[in-house]
Image (tube, rainbow, N blue to C red; front, side):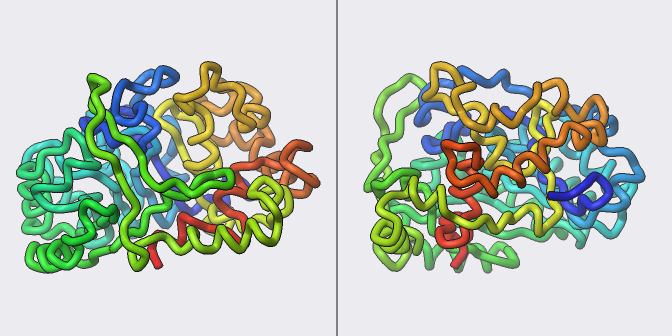
Length: 355
């Protein structure tokens, strides 16, 4: 797949903590309780200094913070970690994805200075004052507005990603105008892949709950013009292959991270190819998370822990083993299924979010 000296991009999950409880996030159970398989781990500045040597940082083009299970803005050392990367590589691109609803205005102004013009923040804001909290449960609008404006006014480069559901689709144009007014450089109408089921059925809705387990909103697909195109392509796949599982067995893999020379580091410090492989480790609906296929490729968590030396992780062979699995005739015979799900050549809900 790649070796240590070829890595150009680091995808960093700095924390498993978050002030929000988004109902389609694996950190919690539909918005209710915390995923029982995670320990709310977080990387410190010292951890990152141990994982990423100054020489390694110099070889990078990009580092972005965006995790499966947490938001960088609630981590203790986010600013200091960005400073560390910037100190050792003035020309690399630094960015993060966030709900924008934590920290004060001064913190955001400082972030704008640290990132400079070679960096940006992607704000995931899915509506306006009366709707953003429906999906971004626990995120306070006035904090989002204050923080976005403080960051942009301090010279920060911002992108607004708007995840479209039925309940907020009527606000897309108004939000885009607001983004321009505040000074966002881009506004992305994100066509969620969250209604594409991994098996054969397309989900029509998703029931959200609050932290006490009470049902809140029922999240529904938007109108066709805002739907992920993979929803219609799935029909073609089913006709051609008979089932999604048959497609996953046959799908050629166009690995996104192999092309980008990108590596994912979890909040535990584990090094894996991408957020999708790491994302299979702790599915909350499994009583035993180790039933997931990804564990067949993990020799031990200790051996994948980059805090003990990132180079050593490459010596485990995990990256080559995953790549070699793509040549197996089926997922039941060893082909890593998540690779087919996320990077199969004919079906790509992730990329279709942005088209």
